[in-house]
Structures are given as C-alpha cells and as structure tokens.
Image 1 (tube, rainbow, N blue to C red):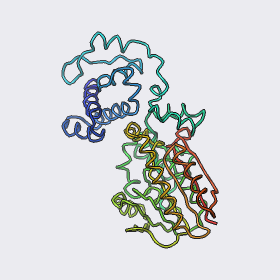
Image 2 (cartoon, one colour):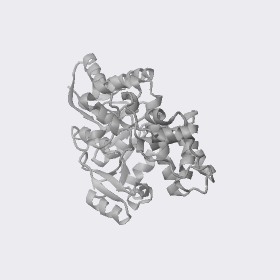
Image 3 (cartoon, rainbow, N blue to C red):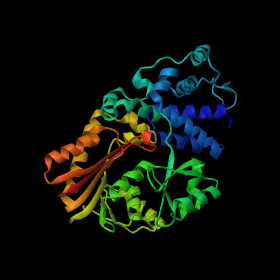
Image 4 (cartoon, rainbow, N blue to C red):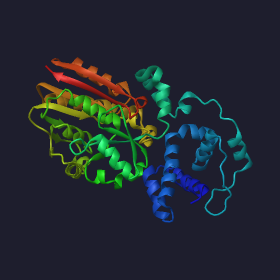
Length: 387
C-alpha cells in the first residue's frame, strides 16, 4: 500500500469509530476486508488510527470532525502537506482549495484542554493530583506508550534475556523503575514470536506495574501466602509468584482470569484460582482495583473520551467496597496493598484517607505515585498494615 492508500484506510476506520464502533472492531473489520494489506500496512494504519483517537480534540480542532478532517489535522500539526491525495486508485480524494488553505495555515493557540487532548471536566482533577506537572504528563499521554517486558527471574536473568532477544533482532534496554523491567526499543512486534516469550522467560508488563508489585513484595515475608484479590489477567500475580510467594488469585468476574492458568504454566508459576468469594484470613492481600485507567489512557485512549463524572463516582464506591472486603480478610499484622492505574486523587489518596478515617487499627506504611514522566504508565500504590 502507498502512504496515501494507508491514509484512506485510516480515514475509513476513524469514521467507523466516530460513528460509535469500537476502534479495535473497526480495525478488524477493515483488515478482514483488505487481505491485500501486509503486516507493515496494518501496523501503519493502526498507528494512524490510534494517534487520531489519542489526539481527538486537537485534530478535530485543526482539521474537522471526520476521519478525513482528523488526518488533515494531523498533517497540519506536523507541518507536512498530504502527499498522493489524488483520488486515483486507493488514495483519498484530492484536497479542496479550502482544505489546502487550512492545512497550510499556522497552527493556532488552542484552548488548554484541546491542546492537551483532555476532557475539560478532568483538568481540575489532574491539576489537583499532579500540580505543576499536569501539562507535561497530559502532553506525554498524547503519544504512544513505550513497550515493556518483565523478565521472569525464576528462569532467566535480565542480561541473558537481553542477549537472547538481541539475537532475534529485538533490542531492549534496562529500565530504572524495576529490576525486572526491559524497555523494548526496536521491533516490539516480534515479541509474540520470540522463544523467550513462548518458553516463559518474559511477560508483557508495564514497568510501573512491575514497580508497584515490587513495592508490595518488599513488605511481605518471603514465602508468605498472598491473595491477589482483583487478579484480572494475572500480570501482577505472575510477578509476585516469581518473587517466591504462594499465590492465590480471585476476581469478581472469573472470566477475566481465563488466560491465567496457561500463562502460569508457561512461566512455571503455581497459582491457585479461587472460585467464589475468598475465605479465611490472609497474611498479605494485593488489590489492583478497578479504576478509570487514566494512567494508561495512551494505551487505551478510547476510555479517555468515554469516561464521565458518574463513572468516576461509581468507581470510588467500588474501590471503597474492595478495601472494606480486603480488610475483613487480612490477618492481624497482615499487609494490604491497594493499587490503581489512575492518576486521579479521588481514586488514590482520597480512598486511602477515607478508609483510614473509617477503620481503626490500620496504618499506611507506604504510598507511591508514578506518572508517565517516570517512564511507564501512571500508577498508585498504598501499603497498609493491620495492627
């Protein structure tokens, strides 16, 4: 496909997304109807589409609220006129005189929320949580996220994994957020076919996610039984199992854990899945609570535009309930880790402060806030101890 044909395909997918179709479904529909498109073409179209989703407000302001308008807004933002838009073959139609003039015009000063591609109602929350770093964080979240892997240290070292991946053309670099973290700097799409992945020496996991799991692990005695209360796909359960803990995994929706047994076998991890509500008292519980995902919106940008004040209020009630449920399951002297991939104080410090106000006999022994400025996704973790 020519660059212009890739633009035409991206325009089709973006228009479907703007009409209400989920972006992944729109991409899949296009790919199935475009068997002629090679892997490089699909990757290029995907990159254009996801940039448009991340930067929806600014691109609409610069080009118009359509797939074509957003691609023109992208060209305007980059200072590059579209090439090959001739209307011939699979190329987009030629620029009109008005479109050509718009693309050539200087980029104006945009309102703050538009320039940062952030819903206006969220700006006060980000300002309150991030202070003077808010604009830098939000600006960084307009671009694609880096790719990270976690080295399974029960099967390999970080140095050995680096060498192994390099032999397959996958370049990596150690990341300071976690001793197990490698940032993939070249050919990340080859990871799924890498031997290290197939044989359980690596897992896909954000560096900040690895960091908060390690923060929790430092407060838990070696070999202790740990309950991952909101396990989901099991990324943090696998990381904690690699640290030598006896892991049990629970999720209110067991379907979210459907891939965990296979992942655990591949990694050589022994993780017990709990069917139903957990019982007994546990020396350590980790709860990666459902949240806005605002710290990872550059990976899942659709969520940014779908998020609402009502959804935030509903999530805080769920988060309070999870803290309450986990507290009832924590043994005397036990440790409870509460985490979110949110940047918003309402889901983080405010929830911990409210919990401590309601319940005597608990102490917060560590809190950590990570933002994309630290290199990975935005995460929060608080470590609580039952006295």
